[in-house]
Image (cartoon, rainbow, N blue to C red; front, side):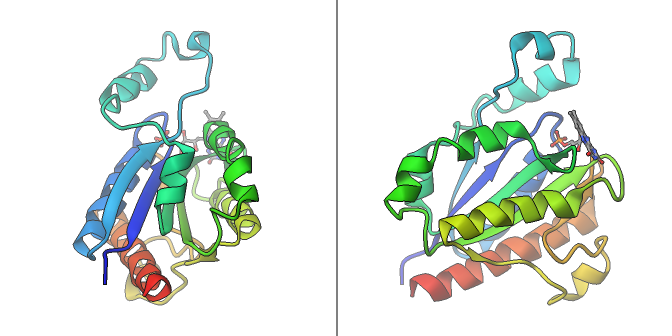
Length: 197
Ligand SMILES: Cc1cc2nc3c(=O)[nH]c(=O)nc-3n(C[C@H](O)[C@H](O)[C@H](O)COP(=O)(O)O)c2cc1C
């Protein structure tokens, strides 16, 4: 049986979702997947970024990570998506990428794959669940199989308890968070293996 192909797709401004994505990629590899890590392209105008040193530093830190393409989406058997919460929904940079996928969606090339999502927000109840639900709504339009973590592992009673997908408070992705993301990524690989067997 060949290794399932997992695309870890993220956007970040300040680094939290980058850290989540790397943790997910490590865990998915450990679970036997072939993994690609890609980022949604920055779409904010330069004048919004200028003067924001943490944002600029994060862009430099990610220069080696390829920008996501439609071909990456076709390549994958499963998607692990991580994106910051913005006003209760996913950051527009991720939406902008998703909105370029119409042609492959129309050809059915996004269907029958697995999908799971994580997020971060500044506040404890800052819209994490609606962000993940919003991504899952899109996942349903694609015809993917959503692999939510639920409460199917003890870590879900210790990580803040979001059954839809792990969510961090911005800037505080800790050891418990890593454990939770590893569980979610391994669960994605496990179900992707079943689907592609
Ligand atoms: C335009 C904007 C809108 C935001 N909206 C919310 C929000 O609705 N709720 C919240 O708790 N945090 C909000 N935040 C904080 C972000 O969620 C936080 O910066 C993000 O989780 C950090 O992720 P990153 O380190 O991967 O960039 C907002 C931030 C920005 C810049």
